Amino acid sequence: MKRTASYILVGFLCAGTSFASFSHVEAKSMDDVNDQINQLEKEKDQLKEKQGEVTNKKSAAEQKIDKNLSKQDNVESQIKGIDQKLSDTKNKIQKKEDEIKSTNDEIEQLKAKIEQLKEEIKELQKSIKERENLLKERLRAIQKSGGSMKYMEVILGSQSFGDFVSRSSAVNTIMDSDKSIMEELEADKRAMEAKKAEVQENKKEVETKKAALENQKKELESLKGQLDEQAAEKEKLKAQLEEEHEHLEDYKVSLEDEQEILRAQAEATSKAIELAKQKQNELEQKAKEQAAKARSNQTSSSSSAPPTLNSSNGGAMFSFPVSGPITSGYGSRWGTLHAGIDFGVGVGTAVSAAAPGVVISTNTEYDGMMNGYGNVILVAHSIDGVTYTTLYAHLSSISVSAGQSVSKGQTIGASGNTGNSTGPHLHFEIHKGGWNAAKSNSVNPLQSPYLY
Image (cartoon, rainbow, N blue to C red; front, side, top):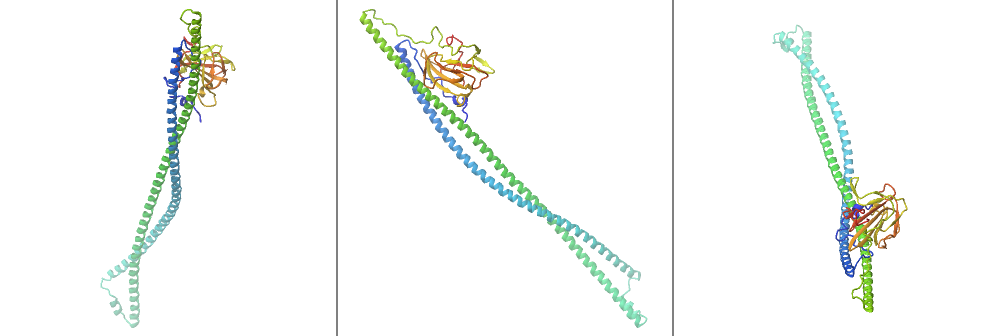
């Protein structure tokens, strides 16, 4: 996972405890050395406290990661359940679509049957009309005869037995015909009413089928819509949890980086305390030697002042890390703070420590820490009781390691073009205190009393 500088260094270099790592102690008296040792011990305790805080934060982050993963498992399980429901619903939808198709086929059949019944009703209506017309003709014939004609009179009016037989047969035929017409008329009317009732029933059946079809469609659309919403909601939650997990992992990595930096600081601080105590012993020894010499020579009771190891040498605290033209100064550049100066030197130019100190960290352009700087070295210095940090970036190679003591002018690496670099050069920064992501402790190296 990529370890960006914004994660790595946020919050771990505070003003009071920044890079409490010192090297060759610059002191003018025993009191100065004692003060520096006390300050170093204090800052060592602060570093230990800070390490404990970071460890607790890391443990809390790991617990959150475990909870996040548990939530992801739960959501994944729910998503699988929803997927199964979606699969079942799709099968139901397919089944209902088959039913809908079958219903549509039935509707088409009913429509065809209705049309057939309509034609049959038309034929019945035509037949009824014809029989009604025939009966009307019979009635008109009766009316023309005066309306009193009776079948018996027709028979009794026979002139002979043969005429009687003929008339009787004719009357029977007429009576049977009238009766048949009436019966057929009644049957046709009953059939027509039955057909009409059947048509009405079929219409109702079609309407019921249509209503059921619409309800099935609405039910399917509603069910599918609900499942789609659930699936979308779970996918959204899953994406949120994955994003949260990524942030937590990045945060955990930043804490691990912070632990590493704090460990390096603690080692450098212990080294500085050791060097300060060595200096304390040297001053004590020299004080004893001077006192003995004074007593031996019976000269003035005042002893000469202990020697001073001051890197300022004429006022400047630091020496130039390389010899070359300055191509970019300190200050605002392209809308952001350019927290140091650039030296226009070719790849492979020797880079030296600007003052005695202890290497805090060395990072390559591939390990993710402060990767914008490419290959970079951080060195802590203590000058006149004040902590400073120098930074050497975009190196092609590194010749020192974290915790190593370096002297002023010692080669620590070679210039290069690594990281976010537009060309071969050395980027050099000075911080009064520790380096931090906001670069709030940075100072202009070209201002007095730093390089000049």
